[in-house]
Image (cartoon, rainbow, N blue to C red):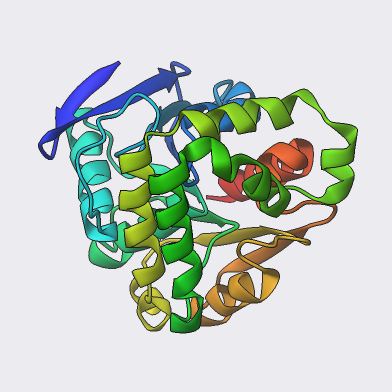
Length: 261
């Protein structure tokens, strides 16, 4: 389904028919389909909204640059259009950054906030990495980023098994519009909200893969220390896309948290 919000067309899907709302916000260079294992279990007791972030999947990919405020405004406008009030928000990587941005600006917006494999701050010395990714995608296309991204997102043991999810994720990366990827790569490094996490007024769960190379455990520990009352779950044998590498452990953590809130 499509909705025109905040001046662009956003692609979304709704699953389940009853229960509290859960909103799923995906990683950079992915789309709503990365949440397959979570949608399957959540739709039994929740109404689930999964959507493609600006510049990704079936959503419009206007010219860059983008900002996290822009991406959060897209999300808020979509929630308002669909009359979704006080949902649980689950965001992974970029989706977690969008969730934090919304929750800081609108402390009463969410029933709960799950931040998976994400960060509240990217040091300035890491910005050249993002510049390199922007330049590579612009000059060589998204296919050139697939192998290095998979190596960052999954453990070597997972890659060696070559499961179907590996090809599925590779296809998502390659099909991401270059303009959308570049726009979000310009937004992500500017996140610096650790000092503002205390303003969030809902329960917070932080999930991170033990071997996450993209947003290492230390980054989740920093969020955990700044967000008083939050809880931290470290998932073994998982890297950045912990929801796909260890879906059962990820789902179990989410289920326990949602049932309490």
